[in-house]
Image 1 (cartoon, rainbow, N blue to C red):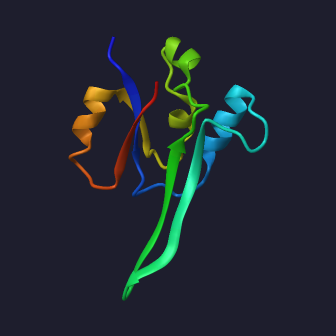
Image 2: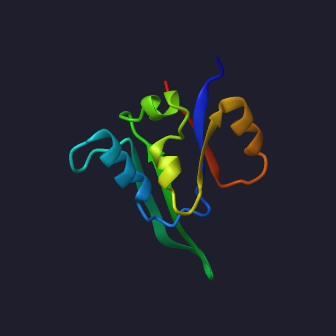
Length: 111
């Protein structure tokens, strides 16, 4: 069986935290705990009119890629609820090929 992961296109993450809340509700985690956390990078000035300001959804150690949902043929809840559609679930081999398409992406493989 192929190993699966989540591809994050953080160039377009809006920082809405929908993935965090969906995960927390799906798994019943207490306040402050979740399987994915959106981290803010910046803002700080790089040079002239160029600024670093980004959001990055990062899976935590509590993430199990929604094993129960996936077993039912569904996507992980963070992927299903991402309003900016920056999270993609799939086979690591397939997702890795997409890394060449853009520079601001991360591939998370858990377990």
